[in-house]
Every structure is written in structure tokens, then in C-alpha cells.
Length: 368
Picture (cartoon, one colour):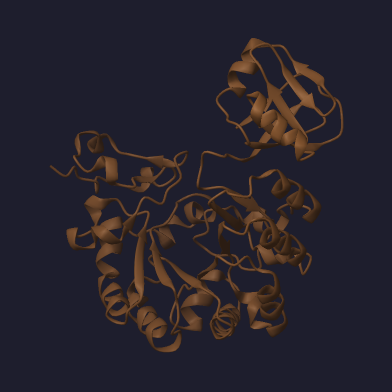
């Protein structure tokens, strides 16, 4: 949620939200800045400054919850950083990336000119997040593009969130450097998984998709170094027209050369950003994609490697693979076609991305 609250003219700060006295006192005891929302006012603490008495602002804020975390800018604008009722919270480190994947859902401008969060601000946000939050994701862009300063932030996460599950989304290329593997090992939270994309079984295919020469060699080297050090790794394979025929070979590579992988996630595309611009080059219909990955799934499962299917509507996948399908699309992005309304499996189907629904040409069929 992004909104304007009052006529605040102070410095930027990170704030938590409190709607009752118990939470208010907890935040005060932890010496955190926060907004206390009553039926009559929005009050900034510890300043005890009334930001707004507008009923519309108060009503809008009441859609949020205790311990939600926001950035309060100098003009009174609130930007949400953390939703305490969600299990899909994340830290966005930077929009920059050293790959330029042709099917990336982010635009090319974000990769080249994307802003980076300051480490100090990231730590301040983390201070406000309850230590018992179940899951946090570290994402970008490529998070490690901010350099070795990121390890200071990661160490803070390790020290505070001792019971939280972490997912680090990275292209893995930086871990071709042994020094980065060693530093990450010293500070990564205990319950962490590294999610790394593998786009092909050869440099020709992988590097064509990343549009970054040498990325395949760096990624594979990084994966092997991380596995040797005992890191848990999720390999992510986004199925496109460029690698669909290579899925069996990718599975063979994983099974024979990357022993110790925790699981493999095979994903249908989100058709926004660069992916939409290159849609004629990368788009593959759901059913065709599901058919192309079947042999790869079989190879992985036969070798004891767990498989998850992300972003595939159930009606486009054979029934025998339904148990692999995850409800993976965040609520603000998920959409269903008109035909889905009368489908008896809608409640357990993950639907499709809002940006992908327009690419669906009558593929979705209700299950009766």
C-alpha cells in the first residue's frame, strides 16, 4: 500500500504501525519509531506528533495491521515495506543486474539504472520487523550487485531472525569467486535457501537467454562451489521457447553434475517487462510448455530430486503432476479467466499472472 498521510514535513524514517495499547507499548519499549492509529488520529511516536485527523486517512490505514512496516517520506507519503499478515515479504536490494535475461519480467531500464537500497535503510527496516516472522526473501535485480557491504546486512538478519526461513534470489554468478562463498558462509541465516536460475544445459543456450557472455560458466561454477560448502540451493528453470527443447538435457546436467540440490522449481513465464517486449521470441503456451518438461521432471524425480511447478494453471498440466503445482503467484498479481469461474478446482489452482492473461488464447479450460 502507498498513501499520503497528513502534512508531515520531517526527515524520512522507517515506522511500524500500532492499533492498540499493547502493541504501542511493545514498540515504545523497543525504542522504535511508529504510527499509533486511533479512531480519531494518526500519531507519530516518539514525537507524539499528530499527522492526521482525516477520517478517510484513518479508514485507509485500518486496512493495514499491527507491526506492519512503512517508510515515511518527508512529504508524508507512506510506502509499505512489510505486511505482518503475509508470508511473502521481501527486501528489495537493487534493481541492477549483471545479466539481461530476454524473458525477465522487469524492464531493461531497471537493470541498467535501477536504484539500490542503502544498507543502513535495509537494517533499519529489519529492526522493525518482528523476530518471529516466518519467511523473508532477499531479491533484486541481482542483490549482490551492491558489493560486499551486503554481508553486513545479511549478518544482521542472521543475528536477529533465528527462527525465520530465508530465500535469497540471485543469479549465482558472483559465487564463482571463492571469496564470496566464504563470506556468505560466515553470515548467512541458519535456515536459508539460495534460489538460482539455470536457463540451459550449455553456454550457448544459457548465455543466449541471459544475454551475458560467460554467465553459464560462472553460474555453474558458483553452484558447485556453494554445494561443496553445504549451502541449500533451489534451482529455478523458467520455461520459454528458447529452452523448452533443452529441458531433458538440463535435468540430466542437474542429476549428474549438481548432486545435493535441494529442489528444482520449473516456472511458467510472467509476461511483463523484457519478456513482453520479446514475446514473439520467448512465449510458449502453457500446455506446450507442460508437455516439454515432462521428461525432465521424470529424470529429476528418478534421481531423488524434488520438483515444484510454479505459475502453471492446473488445467494445463496432466493430473499426475498436480501434486507438484504450487500456488506461487502473489495475490496482487494473480488473475483467472472467465471460464475459471465455474471450475471446481479454482480454489486450489494458482491461476495466471495478470501480465500473462492476455497471452492465453483459450488454453484455460474449466475442470468439471
